Amino acid sequence: MVPFDEVSERHAYLEGEGDRSLAYWRKVHRESFTPDYAEAGQPFDEKGLCVLEEFDLVYR
Image 1: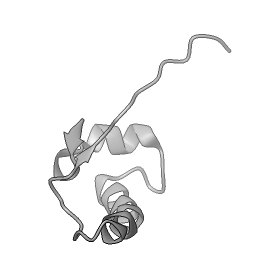
Image 2: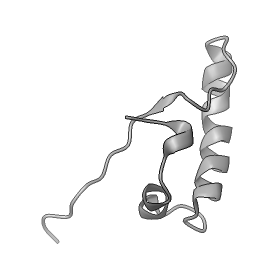
Image 3: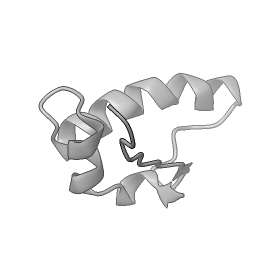
Image 4: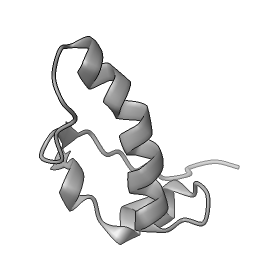
């Protein structure tokens, strides 16, 4: 678990969305998370925790 504002460039790249940049990752995830915060009656929080997972391919 990592605060939103501490997600690494490496994680953004590995997630593989858009141009794989951290700026893109933050933009699209902020847009995605903001309505959830609003529904809970809270403003978006840059320090809010994100669950980050990484998987290994074990069979192809």
